[in-house]
Image (cartoon, rainbow, N blue to C red; front, side, top):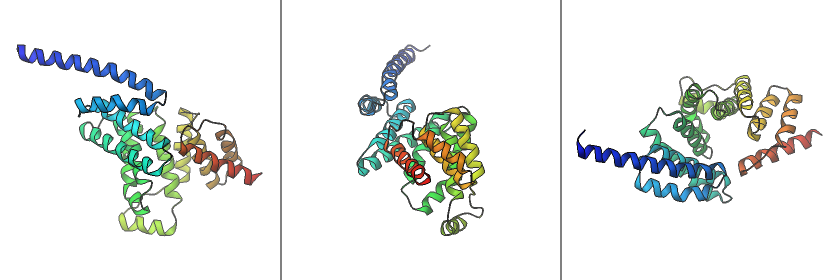
Length: 247
């Protein structure tokens, strides 16, 4: 081995060990929901290693959850945009990495939530295709099953005006199905029975399918679960209101 190459290889080897050690500490902070604490070392690592997909992935995840816990709408939007930019960079470097694909779908979906119905429909096929790819690569991960469940629910719930927009945009407009929404959400619930959002969307799906008893059973279980971010708090309040109206 060329001595200079060997020296360069050793430097890279030790840098990777140091990054790995730093990321393990960062992962502890992320697991403990200490997102602001995790952000500082991640930004420092990204400055010295700007194309490291492990760092970019964690930066995206961190900004996603900073967005989820933000009280001020401006901070929510800014962090969501940063989450998308970091994961887009990682995706451009490693588009076949299943975890990068997963968080790319999550960030993409969040950034279009506040967009017009037209833009949401424009992205719908892309979100569907990528979600199904992630499900194939990560069959035991509940995230994209949940996304596909919501995808089918929301498309199946479109009104006439929105369907007309879809027909303008696509020769074969994306079609949602409450039965398929039920399938994907039940799979997500099987993999993770502790997420409030799955109970909400599955309950709403059962209401659309006229399975009221099953829907209210899901809502009653869902309101007992943790709601760490404002999104989950909104779902909790909606389920609570539905239950109260039924009593």
